[in-house]
Image (cartoon, rainbow, N blue to C red; front, side):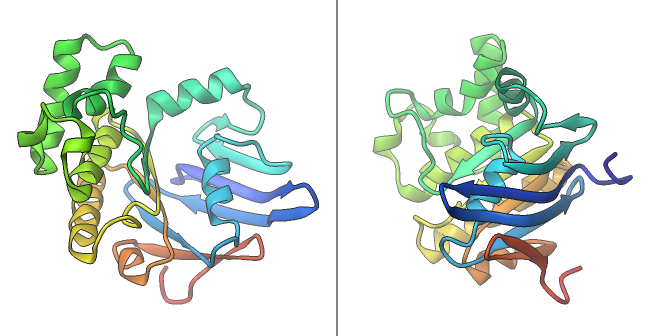
Length: 228
């Protein structure tokens, strides 16, 4: 069973790609409302850890538990449904749909979950207002700046009221000023809604927004001293 109070937990995860191990016994725990930064050099296994935690890939061995759900024994359809209902995602380059307007991009997860268009876009505009991008709702991603596009991606991740947000290098394509603003808005909104944030980054200034820092080296995750 998951320890009391924890929301998402991984134990002794192993994952290899051919002969190369990406995770070699990694452990991880996060609680509601907590922001945990996952750091490490390129190729250390930090993105693989995030993908296992989110149920995007299945580890070769070990367990991932989200509440009472064991993601490692769930089939693909159930894991996909869980990602739609309970998880939000922010990626380095936003991954917005270029053919949709910004408000339609934010509303997309809500629409996929069955919400009517008017209700989905009204909720999306609320989040866009909070993320300071409501004025670009009618524009398409190619017509806005990188910082604005990443705020749209954050609004999309938050609009469905997720319990866990997975952010993989969310400021990697931004300058320092826009990166700081995106991180401030993301962490403030997540804490206000009691959502947990798994933040993969290699930048100390981004990790500074977290409550704890985990370093992944050679496929093993270790708590950084002084961050508990």
